[in-house]
Length: 433
Image (cartoon, rainbow, N blue to C red; front, side, top):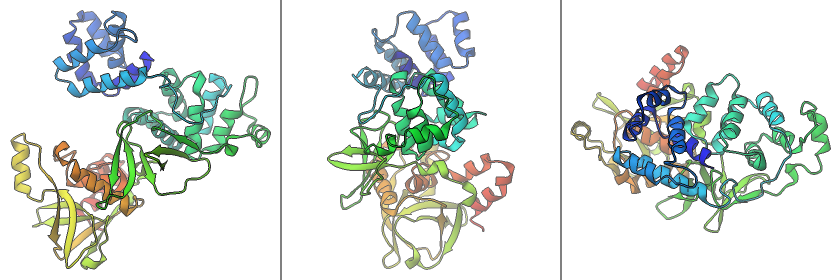
């Protein structure tokens, strides 16, 4: 259990902060250098503290939380405390619901993941299991993503031999049914390369014949959710506060779908849209007729030829009035606030005049208008919790978060792509076709 805690904390514990905490504990210079030069400094530091009896499964993490607080790492202290308490809960290794046991060996499982899963499938499964962004990046950049997924899940002890069924559930939820059946059907002595014979032998009792799995908490074991509602109180979806997985209300899931039971209603999981987002296919279209705009649209307004301002329409346009949620349009106020260190620039919900021309951002895939609008309302309700940033939390990231579930500054993202993307990135920035 404590190994798993160290892996979880390491994701939020960059090297600069490791250096601070190592200094707090006054570790010997040689030990400190060894920790900082290791491949995983955070895990190495936590292991050293565990070896010294400062923290541990029985000892707890109170001392570590005090160190975080002393080093002004209050958020990390809170995460450490919550993660440790969560992992100490009985049965925290398994999600609630119909998780089956399998008898596959680790060697066979590694072969299946390495040989049968495509890169995108590995990423989707990892996201379903609530892995961190750093884990997703390492899977995506690895030459053998299936092997890396196995390494993170099993060598990192996020999944053990006794609950391989959790992985099977994740595979089936992402539609990788053939691989899920291979894992569920394989046992000691079976040759996993004989795929068709395994499928045939298990056809009558495979997971496809199992009823849908209903969970009482998120697949990542998170139990706290943000409710995304419309102004009329309609609950559109819930979002896990831990892994940010989105569970959608009001649909009839497939028989083998994973569902979440929340406040007496069923919600189904779907892959976050940003995983399939192709920046090259994002475009702008000019709109000069206000009646053509619809609730849920991401619109861009040019401010006096100086800069673009982004907003989300939360209602259809009436009498040339646009009802939007956005960061404040007062650019000088934003500059003054950020320059003074006051990042509490407000998110506003207001009606503004249609300026005669706007650009509508067109996505290759996007969420339903109800979910887009519900996200905008939630950001407005929780506006006191958000700090403005020119590069990371601005009017554009607010709009893209509402549309696809993640706040992108797409101009910057486009420039990070290959050289072949530069022209398309420039086209997005300028709004030209």
